[in-house]
Image (cartoon, rainbow, N blue to C red; front, side):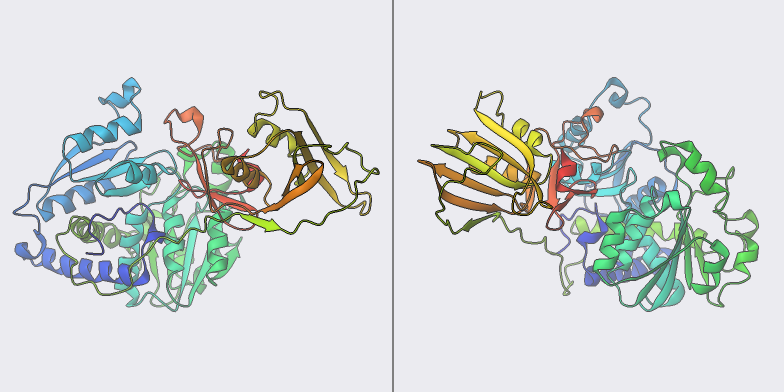
Length: 498
């Protein structure tokens, strides 16, 4: 079964066929619940299944709708709705809390956590399905499924329409998951509005561009309102902002008003993942009862969609799925290209004394990264004889590069991988008896891990040492010299890891 045992931590790990299948199942479940056809939705009635709801952050809709979904499915629930009264207050790590619920033979974990990438870590760590109920400012995929359900319910389709998203696009995890999901469908035209300080992060914009999604940004809320079929307003995430001046600047321009609503298209629908902050309303209170306001129905759709998500992962339904299943991308482990060696006479017009006997020369290093390589390779700790510099080419004065020469040294494959991670494109010359014996061109590895000095620059990432969760960073290649954090999807240059 395609869905059996599947985690739901990131929306990109589902194909278009799988998303449609989930939404179709949810539509059947919604009709069954409304008609109280109990046998059609109490699919776990003869099973002893327990869902652990672990909510490290406040929640009303997500936690309650998951709980109701589990109960209607025939499961029982346990867990906590805040960390008060738990061992988290005694300093217990996320790893150990997860271990306890798996040791108690729970069948699924539904988790909300303040650290980006925490859900992906939980899914990798546990042997039971994990459902991401929001991880920091990263993603909220189960919200996105109910959002897609609501859009299709209102418009009758999930392609060829104008979708507006506004409010907090920087910290708002609901917006992050939604844009990724919409990019899977055809002819979606995205219209984005936010204060410039709260724009959609580069990683998500890059994905949209790569998938050919039409994106238009606005600095005038009223200008965008008449141009969209659905508008998805979000709350300004004050609690995630390191600088509260961002909040003050953004809230002043981020309210969707009745005047704007009156300019919208005839079949327009206004959505919001909720809650709406009454001290800084993102939608004027008078709109709540308007026929174009969909957010009460949107919230209600959390029960049938989340019920289906649980049922599919626990093997209670879904055996008939026959569409395209998601497969993780295959990894290319190769990162070393062997170059031809051309024997040349020794040069004397160089600014660094060459290696006379045996050793290695790392050439064409990105400027000023030699010190990073020295630390990674433990050159000083080993008491290696070395020379390092950022130099100008004599023949091409505009060409600046770094170089590191180490005498009587050879590299392991792991050390070569680390060098390639720091400065993709560099060359390693292996010197024997004063001549270049091998010349290696290094490419950025597909997966980078196990390098002690490597860190994710996202301060909210679960791998950051200050969070004390003992999760080692993993980076995935995202271009010739760019990587993304495996856990939180932060984009950076390869040098930005160190």
